[in-house]
Length: 335
Image (tube, rainbow, N blue to C red; front, side):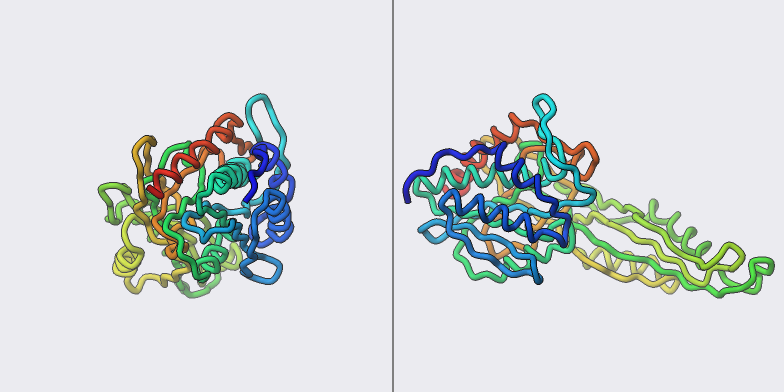
């Protein structure tokens, strides 16, 4: 394959960021990414996910042995790209369109050196990982997966998993002037939630402690009615297989409420190579759903602490440095 002129990582990042792609609305940015990749000489396979939403697999002339993968969807609300000083700001700058741009540039350089690499850009990472699930069904002989998330340019050696669930309590409606005639589901739910902090949940020597976030509360019908039902939405960052935490929650809850499991993303221990600073990240990724794509590594420029915020940014120098870092990581992982 003829050598391609070196692409500009900043220009690619801004081109991807210029298209709004909130989860579920990725169709247009997939087309933009496809145009970028074909312009760089890649062959493209679209992997259908849902109507109007596809993953992209870019490949060269050799069967892919190492794939760079990240996601094109973002959280709302949309913020267009702009540069302030040494930073690129806007939605997706670090999570994860800046990363996608660095991966595209790194993969193109490696392909032109003759390495059997590819790029897998997926939809639906923010929830419900349906893009990764669809990609995992594609037959391949890939040996190494380098997934991209904002790890502050450190090689993550482990990621916590994620358990989304709800706890629902049932009560008995009554006029609030006569509360003894009813059973307050909201009151019972609040009492349950106060116990969560003291609940003994799993720990892991590398991944650390299980953490619980009460993401949302709902219940009751009116101020003058004893609430007949109430629900709490939980996001639990798990460090051991999900079934273990689910069993502990069910035992703790007993018959005092109903536990409903929405999604479980398992925790993962990841590959490492010499020459990179390492870390453990508390967020979940697509890696567990891409288990058929080889030994997983996780690396990316930018910080998770500004992802999902209204001031999301990436240092331009760090994004440029990631192009070379991805090439080093790929060569070491293949070796």
